[in-house]
Length: 260
Image (spheres, rainbow, N blue to C red):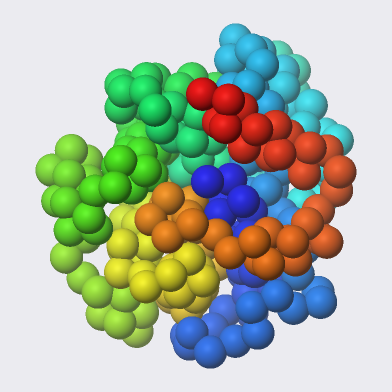
C-alpha cells in the first residue's frame, strides 16, 4: 500500500526531470529523495486514521511542514491560502496520494473505499477527471487486495471508468510524454502494475515510460504491492530517505490493518 507508493516516489524522484526509456537503471540511487507524492500520501494516511473531516487542515499542515517538495503551482497556492477552496483540478496528484483509502478499507466494501477516496480528493481535485483518477486507483488496489487476477482488474477498470488499458507497457513507452493529468497518467500507471511480475518490476515499468516518473511509480506501486507484496529489504532502504513523521504515520497505517 503506502510503502508501495512511497518507494515508487523515491525511486522515480531522480527521473522526473531526467527521464529515461529503459527498465535498466539503479533502483535506489544515493540522490533519491521524497517528493510531494510521499508527503501527500502520508497526509492522507493521517487524515483517514484520525478524522476525515479535518482533511483540508491536515493536508495543508503536512505540506507546510515539508516545504519545497515539488508541489504543483495551484496546489502550492492552495497549501498557503487558508480561505481557498477546491480548485477543480484533474492533476495526477489526486491519484498518487490516495492509496491509504484502499488500504484501510481492504476488508470492507468497495463503496467504503471509494467514499474514503472521495473525501480526501474533493478538497482540491474536485474536477470529474480528478475524482475518477483517484477512484480508479483506489478500485484497482482494492481489487488486487481481493486477489483478483490482473485481467479481471483491467476489465473492471475499463468498464467502470472508461480508461483504455489495452496497450502493453512496450506499446505505451515509445510515444509517451510527460503528462501531469489523471487521464494521461492513471491508465498508464495501472497498466504498469497489472503487467508486472513483481513489485520492483512494476516500478521499473512506470519509470521506463519516461513521463512524470515519481507519480507514475507512486500510483503503480501500491497496486503492485497489493498484487505482489513489497520485499522487506526495499522497505528498509526506503526508510533511510524518509523523515520520522512520514515513517511514523505509515507504520501506524500498517499496524491499524493488522488489528482489523
